[in-house]
Structure formats: structure tokens, C-alpha cells
Length: 259
Image (tube, rainbow, N blue to C red; front, side, top):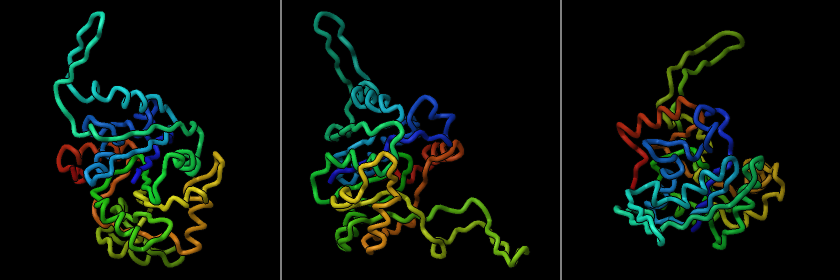
């Protein structure tokens, strides 16, 4: 089953890092967050990736075209016949990575539409290029196939950063501390989707089409979108604060490192 990863956004809220690189190439522990996401999927046997490129996509192209040199020690023999000897091995030798240009200004739905031309199987997976989780991908896929809907979205329960106020008109009726009990929370969209291929036909052939727009509304209205609840670790990287948080977690307790 192929995995589409959305890699084209500009990451404007993380401008400290994304002014010179696309957000999926912002590093956690010396590796792009895109690499971390791909390692999560690959650890469950899903190693056929389609990257939907946009903003500064050439940096992602260069990374994979030169993957050996970026991730290994090597020796270059200079001369008439240049030879490169790679000294150490890595676990990504059996990855297949298709890089698809989807435009700098395109919205997410159109990016998926363009990347979808490389999907031949009955089902495919999709996620954003800026969030990691200790999610069990095989359980997610089995859940999707069991319920047999057009789409499955992973619902996640990130801890609230703030206390909650319950109001009675202009007065606070109850002041609650930060939420820690996910049982009473409503999940948010954490990405890590699984779709039947027919979902691609519902996406408009329009650069302004958003993933969360028309197509998603159609399958929602027809009870064809189910939610896989993931109540363990999930964290996106939308801001510089979250970038620092993920790097701190990686140094101390890399929860999403399931490989």
C-alpha cells in the first residue's frame, strides 16, 4: 500500500526554520521530520512513498537524490572514473520514493489529486509532513479495512496547553486545570488517513481544493468517514515552540521511535 505525504506547505508559523527550507525538512535530532514520519510507516512494512512537493521542493529532491552522501560516511576516488565508496549501511535500502511536483500555491486536496495518479492499489495512506506519533499503522489499516468505509482519519488527543473556563454569561462558573484525561476530550484530526482509491475521484481538479473541503464533506455526509482513535502520543510541528519541544523529546524519550 502506498503512502502519500503532503510536503508542499510553506510553514509560515515556523518561519525561523522554513524561510530557507520546506517544513518537512526541518530537523529533529539531526534528521528531517519527513524522515521520522517515513521511518514510522516503514517500521510496519509500508515503504512505498509518494511525496507531494511544493514550496522549496528542490531541497527534498536533492535530499533523496543524494541520500547516501547525506546519511553515510563515504570516500570519493577522484580521477577519470570517479568512484564513491559508502562505508556504512542504513535501513532504508528498500524504500521506494516517488517525488511529485504539485505546485507552490496548491491546496492540500489538489496535491493529493496529483499525487494520486501513482496510486494503483485499492487503498492508500495519506498524512501530513509535519507530525509524528507512536501510532500502530497496522492496527490503523486493519481498522479501515474492517469498517470498509471510503476513508478513515486518525483522531488524536493532544494535551491542552491551557486551562479551560466554563462561563455563565459574563461570569466564570468553573475554572478547570489543563486537561490530562483524554476520555472526556473530543479528538482532533491527526492525519494518518487511509482511503479507498475512489476518494481520489471525489477531489476536484482545482488547485484551490482543500483536503478538508468538498470531498471530505461528501464522505462525511454519507457516513463513509470513520475515525481511528489514537490516545497515545501525537505531536505536530506548527510553531518554533513545538520544534523545540520535539527536539527535547527526541533527546530524552523519543516516544514515536517505534523502529
